[in-house]
Amino acid sequence: MVDAASPAKDAFIITPPLFRLKAGEKGFVRVVRSGKKLPDDRESMFWLNIKGIPATEYVPDKNVVQFAINSKIKLIYRPAALKGNTPEAYAEKLQWGKEGTSVTVKNNSPLYMNFSQVSLNGKNISGAWFAARFPP
Image 1 (cartoon, rainbow, N blue to C red):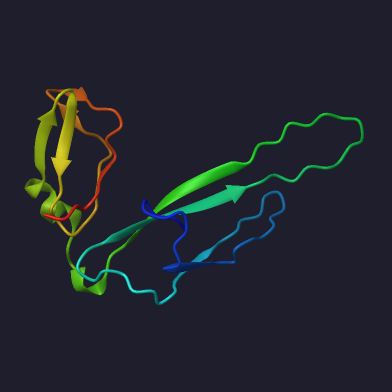
Image 2 (cartoon, one colour):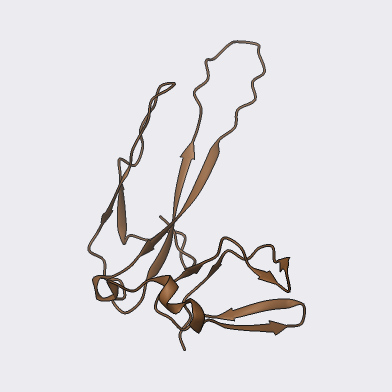
């Protein structure tokens, strides 16, 4: 579990941390709060990294290419104090601007905003996928 500020955080425990699957099997992980204090006035965002390494049989004198697949999943923790708040309620309050050739967005809400698409004058803007919650 990582976030933008640190390579490892202990706000959550992932269990089991390691497991083996046979072909066609499914696996599940549990994400459990560890009790570490998180802000109660805003959301916290973390990245859950899951690595899949396929099994291979050892064959002497044979070259093998093996790929490890890393999935990065966004985990957003919303504290109980923000229950009932939705990103849609704050969407109109985002402050959009332009700096040179870049489009900027200021998010003063306590929530993270995620975008599936952002367009300007009918043109899609690539690379726009979320706006962090920045302090006012």
